[in-house]
Image (tube, rainbow, N blue to C red):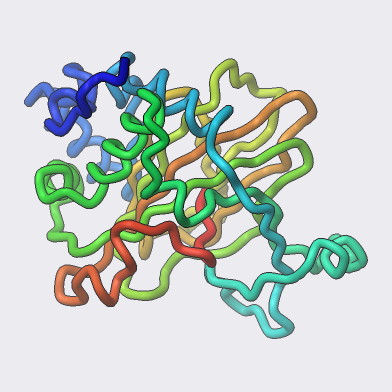
Length: 261
């Protein structure tokens, strides 16, 4: 029997991260970081994380995406023209920008009647809700506007090359990792370049979320995923409040040209 959908933020996020002292600590760590970044563990409630992972890992449908670097790339942003698998594989490795699987557009809207798909749709809708946006604003100390969500699956050999996300009036990025049994030998690590040039490694720990200021850090990239591992992440990009949801991106459908970490 399909359970009723959860709509309240308190039912979707773990009680630990919603505690007032936890929110204050997340905000303190974010503002103290030179990269304006905070990594929060045990983000979703356990009975939410499990079905969302089940859906994205075993039930959802994806399309494999390929992109090459543009000819002129002093500061490559996450937006890149896609190409075919054949052209991508024939290109030199130095010209390959990324390869990963992207959730098909209708998967975020489709109700398959299963508990896992219903819970995923609630989490996906939560990202664009006013109450969740207020939660993020408390952490980052800045007003936020509309959101552009996205879901990526990275299989062995998939990667994302160096780029920035400072485009399209984006202010804050959020990445939720849902890959169980990750270890340091499995790859798929997000590296973020600071002002000093020393990259910070952000580990894709299961049920953790990374919140970061898009305009503060330099380039970032995701290392190649190793054999026998699948990396799942939900990304959300919050734009300037003056832009609004329509200009910032559709709140319901994943973007087809977004690159997350």
